[in-house]
Image (cartoon, rainbow over all chains, first blue to last red; front, top):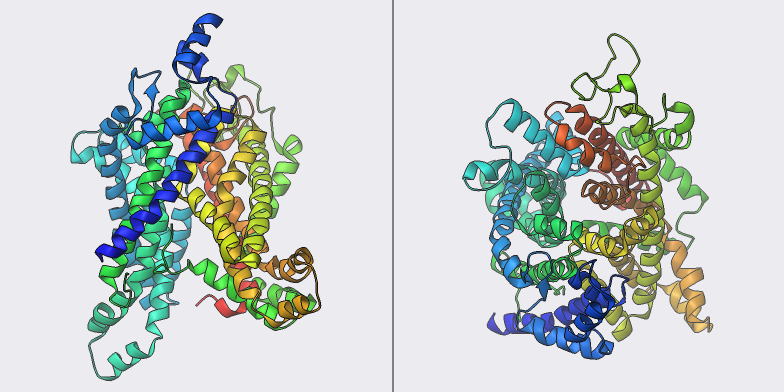
Length: 306
Length: 320
């Protein structure tokens, strides 16, 4: 297990390297002039040129990239023009909020999606199956920002059950988490249903039934345990999408996370902050995919890592 | 960044099966008799059929927007705002002046939603042409070459997939400045990886089949084998993703527009309409509800159509 973990981390190095290169190429070759942005729109040409030399922006591409990697490895993602603070500090200040919302959202996804899919599979071809699958499809097809605004309108504004936005208490978290989870729950329901259906027709399930085990025992001990794997895989594949979706939800609910900060960065042309946030989340995705693989091995003894 | 412990997503499994089964039959992936069979299966699937019909209606609405829209989508009516300067709700029970009400600038909401269909469909379809085209190219080449070259290409694909899709799109659009063409290219550029993985899987299993060996043995050049012997078998995957991909692209476009970096006003786009109307949502919830409903129905129908196409084109994975 330790050897596997080390190897995975070793494999992560070229990927992180590639991510940094892509990010850097974006900064380097795209039309925005960082020196001009740093100096502000009213600065003189001389001032802009001075800043360009100061920031090393007149150096060749590979020198700049080398310095970027050198700094990034030390946790320095540049300096935000707008917030007037290091990008990494800005990110770390907001990250706990995004993490909270992401975990709560994935929890809601699983809490709704897995039981719905299981129920649909067990009661296959009944109205229950049909209804939950159509509901899942509608959930999957609804834009999260729209769902969020509808939630705000009905549950916060009309019924007054929850605050209209912001963060602080658990009540602030409920609507954003449910919104974030509803769409994804549809994918999990569909996935769980087909995964459970596949397992239900397996020989060992028939054997378990034949030897007279109660239906619920068969479901718990034989079906769910075997059907869980694709679901875990899906959590892993879901994370890049989910992190993207969180941007929208943070915007709707004025949730002070990374996504909202990034949208503000876009509106103020703060390129280092935009790219820093993208790099940071990409690294998170890589890390979480390692965690998901480990979870796989823990849940399924057939998978041996090494 | 993917270890061997991962199982491929169900789509990859089923579509590669489809390609293999068609390949095993030794004919082109969708010869005429199979088309008839697929159509018969598709017709039985009522949800997919409904999705397909709605998609057709939507295309017509987008094409005929100038005829169908009751008003100019940019016209600001003097009676389009109440005395307090608020949007006018639907006038439906009394008159047909504003069927869905007006927006915060006193413009007819229905006309704007009808014109918005153009933006959504244009972006959705064109971005998908880029994404599917590029992913077929990458997936087919990587899958056919295999070995270290295929590996390098697919590791690059994995790397692109590590970027949160929407975040990458936001960063690209922000730097390139939003316009409808930039948005089309960016959405195509961030979305191709998902389809490329599926194509890659299908090509990996195709290239092991006898007819590829036969082509190699008679000395056919690699590009010819890929073009003439591999690509036709990918048709069913491409058809399915032509539909499923559009739904994702419509969602991405709406999301970008909602964040204010999509299609820029005054061009009416559904996501942008929600963004501009949301500060009025307490007084005028219809500014949010109707455009969102349009987005949701569009995505829903492309999803239903895509699902139905997959079931119809892939007899091995029938809806259970």
